[in-house]
Length: 307
Ligand code: SF4
Image (cartoon, rainbow, N blue to C red):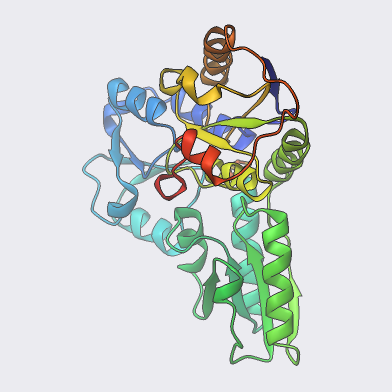
């Protein structure tokens, strides 16, 4: 069996930089990480072992007991930053500059008097950080959520990890249902996401099935798995090498390997090594190498609702 790695995958510079800053913190027990630093259970476990206090993403508004609060790469709203400052906390800010750019774009559109539409996942921490500073907005997760908005001026931004093709569909629907509005769009999908999505488009053309590595609650990892599904290529979403099972790959000749932006290089390499060990004895099938359909996804134990 052949394994093809996506040409772009794994940790983005925003997450790498955040981890670098965390690695240099001299007194972890004095620091509360404001939500999940990365959507990666192993990293989160290691941070706990190092002594960091970690606030869950749903309870970030609870008062931290440590004197220092570390803001993650997903960022927070200006309101939240002020709240933390006024409670006397010292802040370590690892907000990715491309998340900051999305936040600034939304604020600028609002300042132009536009009703802001944020195309993204409702409740996601990055999305929350942007909309909490807006007076008027809607979060639009998909085409079905688009409606006619009660505004003549509309501004559109997007979550940094939004798939481009989905973004295009939603934008078209917004334009169709609000044909009389003056609509301004700022593309805030980050370049690392775009490069990974392009690499994924290439990968699915070459393989029979794909292994996607990343945290269960990692939005961009889930998007990679969904992209396989859209191309009718079976995918299995795992968080680490130990979750691989040889039976999943029986009948495939070419397996693709990709990973979300929260995945460590060492985890990707471990999955690659384990894939080679597990699939070394699998007999190649004859005839068409491509296997498609939901039945195969079931065989691969894909559970998109879980991711
Ligand atoms: S996915 Fe993009 S926006 Fe998010 S941390 Fe990485 S580089 Fe920054």
